[in-house]
Image 1 (cartoon, rainbow, N blue to C red):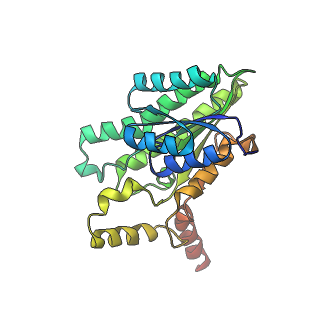
Image 2 (cartoon, rainbow, N blue to C red; image 1 turned 135 degrees about the horizontal axis):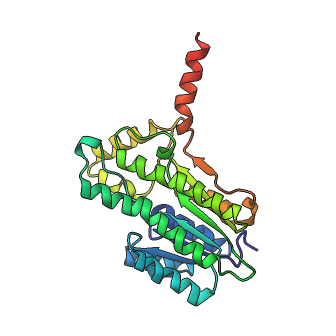
Image 3 (cartoon, rainbow, N blue to C red; image 1 turned 45 degrees about the vertical axis):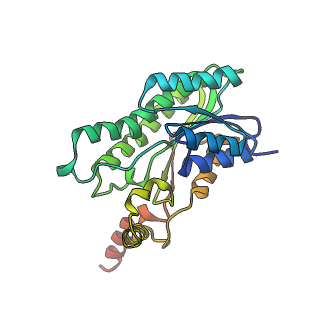
Length: 266
């Protein structure tokens, strides 16, 4: 028996990267998985390979969310897990930030998460036996220590961090057994970095800059984040809500370590 055997799970941005790894892991652990993505060809391929169900989803559009969650309700009559994973990289430094890019960035990385929480929880409230479920929001370690060169990404992911805590506290105080937690990855080897790999030189420079952010000396793997999501999707995490789970190879402890060293030096 799998760790989430029989649960119904929905993953946004499930066609590639972290989302794909979560779909694969959830399916392997016994869940009935529905994945949504704007990339229909990629999403269909991932679904077919994992015995999952694909639905087209533009996370910026509330009507798209209503249709996607409606498929889950029609086919399964319940929702136990939703992972709000879809996201993009940010806008760069503040002085070069275009307003349209900023708004689109927040529409995907922040509003898209809100809509997933909203419509996922509405179905979770209808679950047989009463409201129940696990909401998992993919944030970033940039929500804890901001990325200096990317104001939009840090801002949007920071919004996800506190949105998660607000939702968790609200549901818990109302007696709803719907948990809401956030995952904060550091650099992970996914296709999100593909636009920056235009040549061997640019690829090498990118990897060097990413590894420099990680005290463990390597970037993360998608399956490592999927394992953390699996824990939060399972009943093993039943006492965790409103919490932030960091998987960044020690990236967010760097400044604290430096400060501690400076104090030790007198």
